[in-house]
Length: 395
Image (cartoon, rainbow, N blue to C red; front, side):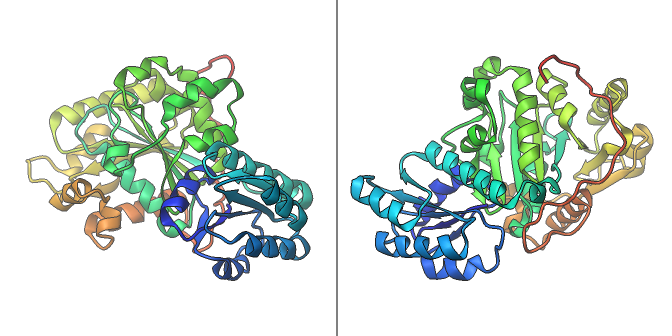
């Protein structure tokens, strides 16, 4: 993904919202030159408005000889004929007004297409699609959103994997408030763009959280849910799956039409339960429903949250009731709620905490391997073909 050169962290965060998860920020051109040696397949460099135009032009002039496949995209506060002339002379690919985030996202997408055209599509064809990990429970209050958020953070640790967290609880989603995000756009904005929806159009709707992790958040107004077609959710998840290593989906506590669409795209389903009889009863019904929907059992994973609560019901009873082995037992801790209330998931606030270590270990199990320091899309595990749960036209 692109390297952004900008010494203003505020500006850089704004640009990151347009260039997408996985982008790297450096403060100046010297840092950029050092970083380029580590990214031989880089396709775009975005030069922010804080960088001197003459220095940016000199860099672009050098790169068009030494790295001709790299597109230099210049961002300026004011775009006039003198700026355009200098960009043209130096070989910059595009010039974008700093307020035009949609234009920036489109320019980055065109840069990637240029790179593919020059290097040959064969290089990218070996990179397979990512995995959709859906977190579901038929009962509210079991910690589903907290688990989804922390799992996404764990998967994206150190920026080694590109992860998108999607909030599909479209009426009462809490991903944005859990991550203390103030998104400019939500999934509801995709409704007006669906006729020409592709990743270049979808990406500006994502909100950047940190390196390697972005979120597509739920609408602010609960009634916006009624304007979102269920089929659009399937298209969005399919696009995200093609452009991220992992897509973590937080869901509403019901088998609504959006959850069913998500299940069609899901590679790994996490069923969340706790040690209480009402929740176990609801999860048991959910398991039976999944059987009716022909969702493969090997792709279901039981997560027991607050696993060490002393309530007269143990993990062995959970396993026997649901006829499933517990894939991850997350211990009870008040620090989880404290971290969330402070605006940081526990996996960031206390990485050595028992809850954090459990979730990181589980994330690595789902991913199939520990995260690498350099980003490379992890290959998907081979799997038997699976019948679509929903057979809608137009999918």
